[in-house]
Image 1 (cartoon, rainbow, N blue to C red):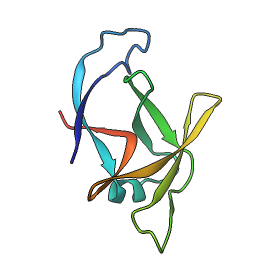
Image 2: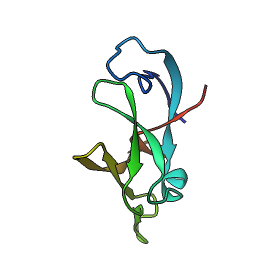
Image 3: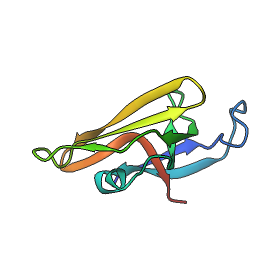
Image 4: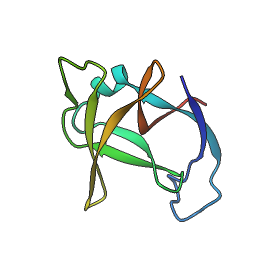
Length: 101
């Protein structure tokens, strides 16, 4: 399990000095359990956290059980898909975050 430290600017996105929290990436099993309408934390390009909405059911494959694609929506016009990434023996979603403490 990989952990990262990120700035939590969800309460005031314009501030650049939010508190630093310890997080980890979502695992494949957690990604498969997501449902349409769930809200998860997303690591932005600048390293800050924002909350995105899962916009559909996660897509999985029978031949590749560790491959998952999760569609998401942020705001009015921002859409995207997050794909699993392999790091050695671990599979995780690179930008979906779960706060540890």
